[in-house]
Length: 175
Image: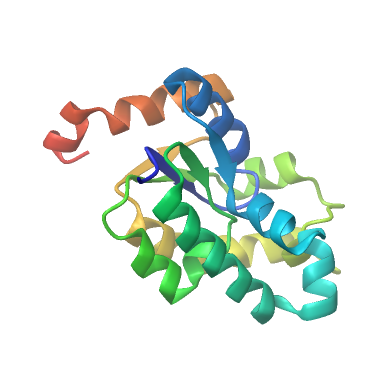
């Protein structure tokens, strides 16, 4: 078993929204790594960050991703920071990974500046989001087979673009 699509990208890219649409269209289940961790731990990601720290969360996340890659046969969305873990990057090799790209303005608009997202909390969420994009962009591009720019698209159009990118013809053409 293996996911039919693995969606990666920063907060606000639409991984969960698009992932659910994609799963509906394909008639497969949807899950995301954050939900898996929250279910396994019985608490919210923000609580895990607060009480255990980011390093402990990343270990939990790596285990959740490895399990989902081995057992989930639908659409899988990863938390924005998951590909930053070397083990997750290795685990993603050979899977149909799609990077949902979002720019600074659209990303900030989508997640809002007063957010419960642990890595965006702080004095200047816009600057934090910008730094996060700069750090993660090369990693996202390195592990993804396909990149979809989402800034000016509605979720339905992003799902269409993902389906087109995952088609056998697109893979043969090297897109």
